[in-house]
Structure formats: C-alpha cells, structure tokens
Length: 325
Image (cartoon, rainbow, N blue to C red):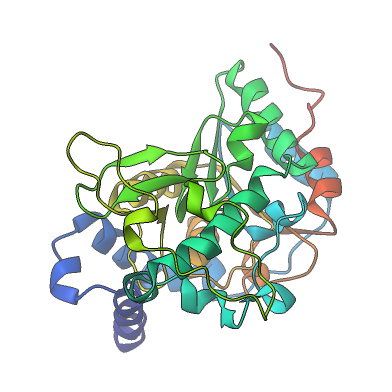
C-alpha cells in the first residue's frame, strides 16, 4: 500500500509541472496531495465500491439537514449554457489540440497564437448566459444563507457563469478567462474588455484553414499598472502548471468540513480535482453525482442522478418542506 501511495503522490507532483523541490516549499499543495493519497483514503468507500442510489426523496432528506454543502462543478455545467467542453469534436482549434495551446511553453513560443485562442474562448463565453444549473446553485446559496447554512462552489470551469448567476462563494481551481496576470509584475486583475486589445478584434476564428494573425508582442494585451507595461496572459492554469496554493488551501478546508457534497457535470478525469469527491466520500460524507452518464468515480458515491443537470439539479436543490426562515 505504501508503494502505491508513493506512486500516486509522485504522479501528482509530476503533473504539477514544477520540480519537486519547489513544490515541497509549498505546504498547501503538499498537504493536499498527502491527504488525497494517504492510506486512509483507500479504506471504506474508496476500497469497497458502493452501489449508488437514485432515490431523490432520500437525497432531499439529507439535503434538508446539511449545514455546509460543497458543490463541485465541471465542464458539463458550462456545456448546458452552450460553452464547448474542448474535448471530443471541440478539442481542436485550427490545426492544434487545445491542450497543446494551453501550456506555458506554447505561450512563450507564440503568445500571439495563444492569445488568439483565448480571445476566441473569451468572446464565446461573453455571449453565453447562465443555465438552469447556474441559477439553481445561486438561488440555493442565497436561500440557505438566510437559514445559517452555507454553500460553496468548487469549480473547474474558467468561465464567469457561476458569478453571473449570482453565486458568491466560488472557488475557481483552474482560474478565470475574465482575469489576466502580468508576466512581469504578477498583478492579477478582472478584465472583461471586448476585444481585450484592438489587434485581436475579429481574430481567433477556429477554422482549420485560418492563418495566424501573428500580432507583434508589443501589441498584445499589456499591463496597465504604473510603469510596468508587461505582457499579460490569461489568468488560467495552463497544462503543466500547479494549482494556486491559496485556492487549494481553501478547497482543503471545504472538503474537510462539508457534511454533504454534490459533484455536478464533472468528468472526474482531471486531477487533482477528480479526487475531491472521493476524498469527501472517504470521510463517510454523502456524495451525490449529477451527470448525463456515469464517470470513473461514480462507484464511490452514495447517489447518482443521471440526465441533464439542468433537469435533475433544480429538483434536488428546491426548497424542502422542512426549511424555515
């Protein structure tokens, strides 16, 4: 068991994209990795797969008693607003796979091309509206807050749709398309300009035969901080980069203290986020999965509600008859 745990943790470190010696300085990342990969996680629900239930009435009873609810959302939630998941038929932009563009190396090599790609994604998202899922989550958070109960959304989505819907307590583990970070001074700011800079106007068409715009670096988005003017990048987690340690610390607190968890529209194949639900289940906390199909982690969860999340989730989170104000 120790060898398996060591192998999993080594993989977690290697996927972070940073040398192990640098990661070891980041206690938040290491603590989360150790907790997710520790031997006690392989006991109980993670060792013996449970037969999940689809009993909505039973789930609603648990929901009515929960005081601190963690809701993990994935690309399937955004898909219900018409945002492509960038997997399958949408995994290519022009001739390139999305995961080959969303890397530090690609940005360093050709920032114009990468900015075209992200400009396309930003403009796409700006034209979308929150789905029934986003609205149900925001309404639930606001309603339960009045009762002294809490809801936190831990999302892998990089769009702004949860906040547009009205959700307040949102942890963006993969960053946000609507933020930029300066490569020189590190300043992070919300940026919803459209286009984000004049040379990107009408650029970013994903067609396979569209040539690159080849925008000069000094014409790409630049930092507005006093006397900086550094090159900006999207404030998202590129493939090969570690997650934000401050966000991970907050996530760790939520997964250790919640008394009910929902996993909504998540493929459960992107790590370390794929382990958040199972980690919660390992504490004996009820976890309910909402998805159009089963996932590699479905067997670890107490409940699975199959179908469009926009149909199943609002019903699950609707006001319970026992709720008082």
